[in-house]
Amino acid sequence: MKHLFFLLTLLFCLPLTAQHTYRARVVDSATGEPLPYVNVCTAHRKTISNAKGYFAIWIDSPREYVQLTHVGYEKQSVNTASKTSVIKLKPSFHEMKEVVIFPFNVDDVLNRIVKRLKKDYTRSADIETMFFMRSMLQTEMGNEMQECFLAGKSAVNFREPAVISGKLWCETDDMNQESMLRHLNTHVLLGLGPYVSNSPFWATALFPLHKIRRSRGAYEPTLNTQVDDNGNFLYKIDLRHGFFQLKGYDSLRPDEKPAPVIIGDIYADEEYRLLRFDGEAHFVMLRSNEKAKRITVKFQVEYTHERGFTEVSHMHLEGKNEDYTFDTILLNLGDESGEKYPAVLVKSNLLDAMRFAGYDERMWEQYSIVQRTIPEEQIAKGSEARGQNFD
Image (cartoon, rainbow, N blue to C red):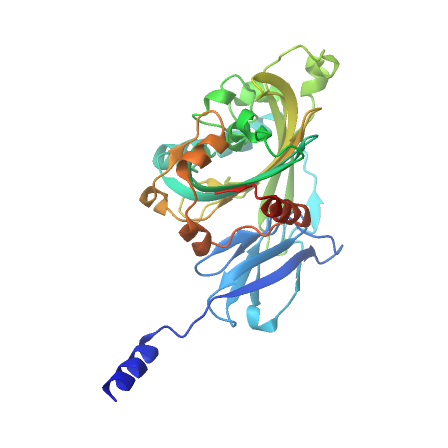
């Protein structure tokens, strides 16, 4: 009887909540098109939708609220009890009002954004945060995918990645073929943005927000504003035009090596806080099999200000050349506990750091990672079948 009483007492003391998974797809309410890389969060966890708009997030109760945010769209909260499988986000900025802007006004907005970024970097440069990263590589030899948890500095741009735990999937025709990822230094791309600090790889690159006078002559920026129904402003600065026409870089020979040039569209709010940068990096020389080859990289970086400073929320990168195609996502998990876990600083490539760091099952049980796309899932399943899942 005493044992029964003890078991009943223990049962009632256990938490009543159980972990569930809520899955849905995010689309544009007007067009029905899927919305990739939308922020999805609960009170305790966060993720983003994948390239096709799908997401999966762990919830502690079947009646929990999930909040979705995306630049240019209205915030939306969804009660998971509704079992909604398709979430339609409404554009919050219905009209773009083109404004006649004198040059000094464009410069003024850019300078205010830079001033804020510099202030945030000065105050928060050393804050280390937990990230999740997935990178998919396609070559003639086969497909590869790496997933890992990183510790990194997130203020203004992502810096100093260190691997906490990682997995590698490798589909190749030759079972003895060494992973191509070991010869690629794609991790240097994670530092990209319109304003980059303390990233040696990008020391000679031209960025839109580094030197405004130089940028103005190179990019010929244009400034537009978008206004939502509540009168909130969204600045959009187009920094895509002018540079190539002025410099004639579109006629470069393949063997020429100009400094990298970053172009794109900057979004900022009325307080001059950087919200998003949709950009391209041209003339980037990445190492591959001990040789450097040029590649053009398209990327999107979104920022958050939840902790009182501008930091990377998530980013998506894609690029290709004649040897390979890659696609990478990076997600800020909003957790400063990276310092609690042993981490291996990334030097030449992520794969070597992953092998030294090893695989920690606890990490994968604690966080909702970004839902895989069908091709990514196929790589994972195919690799496991071949016995090439390196933990």
